[in-house]
Length: 391
Picture 1 (cartoon, rainbow, N blue to C red):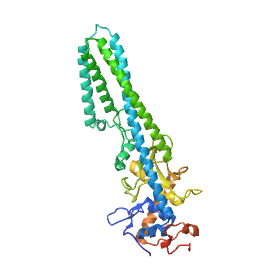
Picture 2 (cartoon, helix red, strand yellow):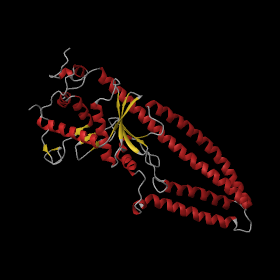
Picture 3 (spheres, one colour):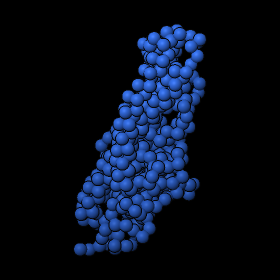
Picture 4 (cartoon, rainbow, N blue to C red):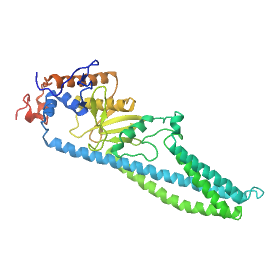
C-alpha cells in the first residue's frame, strides 16, 4: 500500500477528514510538488530535502523579490501620506485667501468681528465634537454602510502581520466620503480652519486687520505647502523606482507580500487547502494572486506551477468572498501568464486536493511520467527509488 502520512476517511463532499471532521491539510506547495511528481511529493513528506544550485539560487531570488515588494509598499504609503498632507495644506491656503478678501470688502454694517468670532468659535467646537463622536461611535454600522470594496478592508486586517499598514484608507480602497476615515478627517480639517478664522477675528480690531492676519497666515502656509509638495515629488520618484524594480505595472496596488516570517497563512476550512502566495495585488478592484518562479523560463507554464497558482486563487476567493478572474504566473521579470479561474479550473483543483488527501491516507504514490529529463531536473532524485535518470 505504501507510506501513509495521516489517518482519515473520505467525507461527504469527497475531501478526506480526520476524526474531528476537519479536512486533512494540504498546502499549495504540496499540490505543486504532487503535480510535478507524486514520488517527489512523497519524498518531501518523508523529509528528503531538495538539493542543487537551483534551490539555493531560488531562495535568494525570492528573498530579493520580497524585499523589493516591501520597499515598494512602504514608498506607496509614504507617497499617499505626503500627498494627503499637501492637499490639506493647499486647501487651507485657498480658504484663507478667499476669506481674507471677503473680510476686507465685507459690509461694515454686519456683525462686529468679535461677534462673528464667537459664532465661528462655536462652530469650530461643534465640528471638533462631531469629529470625536464620529471616531468613537460605530455610526457606519448603525447606518449599514459598507465600503465600495469592503473586502480590501477585510484583507488588510487579515494581513495585518505583513506590516503593510494603510494610512487613512485600507490599501486599494475605492469608497466615498462616508468610508475609510474621510468624514473624520474632513471634520478635523474644518475644526482647524474655522478655529483659525475665529482667532483672526478675535485678535483684530476690525475686519481689515482680520483680513491682513489671514493673508499673512496664507503666505506662511504657502511656504509650508511648497516644502510639502517637494517631499511628495521625492516620494513619488522613490515609489516609481521601487515599482519598476519589482516589475509591477502602473496603477497596480500591493496588498500582500509573503516573506515566510510574518505573512498571514490563508486557510480554507472546507477543503483543507492552505498557503501563502508570493503577492496579492489589486488590479481594477480585483484581488489577483501572483506567483513568482525564479528558474529557467519555459516555453509555456508548467502544469505544476498552474496548479499551485490555482490553489492561491481559490484561497483568495475563500478569504475575501470575492472571486478573482485569474491569477498571474511570472517567470523572471518580463514573462507573465494569466491563469484563469473558472468552473473547470475549480474542479481540477478540488480533484487534485482529494487525490493528495487520499494518498496521504492510503499511500501508493507513484511516478506519473516517463520522462528522463524530468527526473534529471528533480531536486530529490538523489533519494528516489523510481528515478529514470542514472548519473
